[in-house]
Picture (tube, one colour):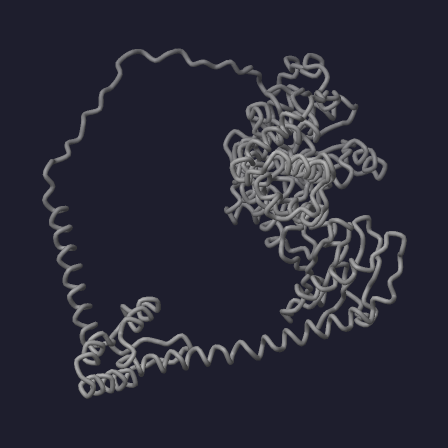
Length: 624
């Protein structure tokens, strides 16, 4: 049964809801659809599933892009209603006829919807009745053709057997498409065909020879088995008697003296505090506090690239028709008009290191937002698609919530508790180094910081963090190796509370997203300590693997947590951003798949090389 159907504008104004249904929806499926699908450029999907306590809904929608309307239908997922798509299309067509931008109430549409719903349900019932009947009729025709194969000739018989896999698995017979097997029955049919062939002469005899014979099939199968066994014997023989004998080469040892060890580390004893080097005064201001200037160059060359890419796929038009269309404008954009420009944009995004799945979904969403929309005068399809894609990218990369960590730190300080940040990610992405960069930036803003060495798995991890703490002159809490990281983090937070530290930066071990024991330990750490911010540290070099990493990290944190409301990834820290040139697509892939904003960008090896993500610069580079 249909739970709800409503019509609203893209601005959020509800124009009409079905009062006849009047079912109170559990949870907020419409708000979740708008927040998770429509605003996140996932509107190209066929449907959206929403799980609420005590109910599971499926939502389907369609747009009227020219009028800026959204039509949404909600029904129970278990029902699998077949008429929803057709009903939405009919409602869209009928409502667009009476729509007036000045009206806000459409009570007269209730009767129209009632008629449309009855028509859609009647058609769905007819389809349910027709499908099984048609199936039985088709099966009956196949049986008739099999019985009459001696009269109609065996060519059709052979074709049907070839299509249905006529090789067979055994001599007992095969299965028909309706699930009934024929064994003795098939033999009887074959014998009947042979008898009719003898009675009717040579023509029927020739067709009878082409009928299905179980004994011939068994002989062919035996022959095939012998051939395979012979070939296997030959292959084994070739392996036993190799032509050339492989001899092991002697190792050549280098007798030259070893070079001096290149060790440039500062050998300082742990108890010698007088040699501590303070780097805060030497490094200068962090790049987080500097505004990045983006040049506003003309984007006409970008439109030309799109139009050039779309020329081979588009149909050639005359000079007069193209000029007239650019002046008068196209009536309504169709999917065929958008495909060349969207294909060029998809290829361009993929060359910028955007995951293929993300690029395809983005293009589908842009096509859904433009299909049926009227093209303005003196505008091209390529420029319209480019502008729509640019708006979509800006909307995705712009954070939906505040990412002002300093404000959150001061709010936690007023509550007399430390602000806890946990750094997670796969191996070798630079979690410890960028943790030190974040600590340096916080020190610049007069915030007291403590490091927690919770990477008790990797050799040298504690020493690495100890070196950063010594250079930045901040305290570090450590318990050595082979300890429970969740307990170490909890004790570090307690120590920070006693000492009055404002922020605790928790370093964790790198782990692959498929390593369940380590992911279980990370889930325990987050559940036990309830941090204020969970930062996923990822490389800007990854392409398609960014989707796999983030989606599986979130999935494991949700599945392995013992809390009914598990904590997932809150933000992203992109590292090695200075090594990718214009391949900035990893930022888009990570934000799209997780919905979390990019809060920091690592762009070098010094403590100051940490900056904010410039959305305009990223979008310009992606569409360049």
